Image 1 (tube, each protein chain N blue to C red):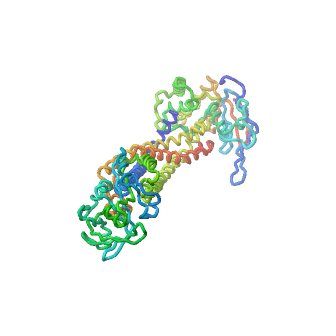
Image 2: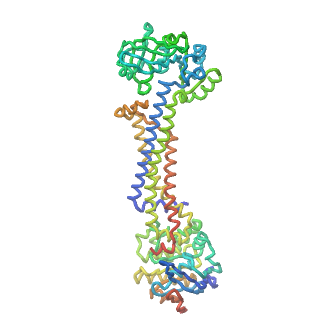
Image 3: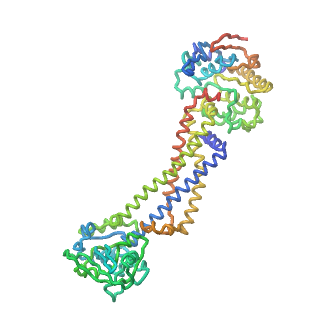
Length: 232
Length: 405
């Protein structure tokens, strides 16, 4: 599936209105997106431009006020909340700005978690966790809890966790925002390598120039609209 | 499920102090409920045993309709033959024939309404242990026909002492007023003040003579060898003597039966109060635990943890924190109940209140495995109910908003 080059995400005429104090706020206003497998895409724009809202709608965490998101041709807006959770589990990996690891689990257990939710067998889980720990360079930190890891290490665990169930694509919301330059560089190198070698689709929301520099495609949002879409 | 158990267990210990406090609350709640239940059942069991062994006996036989109005003319026919037949039954330990006289006991100082039992001294003593309750004087003397045993309360009220003369006035079988003079032979005291205020004892022959029906008998009190034989013996005797009314202690002593049932309700209320307090403690703690983890719960939902699993995780956390407190509470309860069972709980400071209900003043708590099981089930039910709201609250968390908090 990962090597398929057909479109993975099609967003049509996405609108998201927040009804703040009964004055409608257009967080996203008519966004079209077409993202193919294996792309390394950065959604950039100033704060409040709608990057995270677009990412949330693509990831099924939020529902558009109008418009639709198709993932492999499936309109995810038609899914019930429970079906959407299941859909996310099987198809989407998430990397959050604040790492958001399970604090009571070790790095190994955090990575294994989504596979456990999927009911994968122990042997497969063990092999995949070992592979991912190697990929993100944290084999020696496997039994450390998030509180014992640096920010960069935690974010690498988060990337490994997102990759564990072999999703269709990874959504990363400001993944480098809380990292120092070295950690951010390491993390981006890992994600870029995974993208190039394993053709994993990455979609970032960011205003970090280090991410934008490495992205192959940069989509710029302003006031909830796409104002620029460049493939490098 | 193993993953959920592991996650829930570790979540429980994220805030150790809070978990220890709530586990302690569960332990104290469990201990209080078990101890209260043991105390109550011990007290009731002792009261029931007193009612059976010293007041009403297991079963009583009367002529039909006698118990309703205590009409002197409604006496048992061939009572001695019936008593002899009943004594032969393997389940029966003793049978005591009685003549019952409702009357007025008069002294120079005053009068009091009494229920006078005309008893056969030996049979009565082995049935209700009457001689053991004497605090002054002696049990019936075969040489003295007109001896009467009165209670300490009656002695005080009527200003009587040993060998004082009293007159018992009653209605005979023809409806005429009759009376007899008696001398106080002994003064008794039981733990049941209302019983003491009402009951006096003379010999059966003296009572029958007073009523003008020699050999009369109104009541056969039957003591069985075991409490659990009551229902079968009652049915069997009723079948054997269809012309006689056979009643068990709950029917002949409805006050005691009412006390047992009303104490059941009271116990239920106390237990509910304890568990309501526990429920609010658990609910508050778990709600805090959920609200503190809004972002984490949002993350779990984002990465694919379904609502059912989330709900179960919160339930498990609540159950686990309750389970931690259970062994401590149970152990504490069994230790204190065991100690109190051996040494008794002395309630003599509340003697007046206790004796007005007929309770022993030294209570020996008692508890059965069924009681413990019921309370444990109640703890788990409370934990589950308390977890329901926080768990439902967790389900309402919007992932997109929560992960940015």
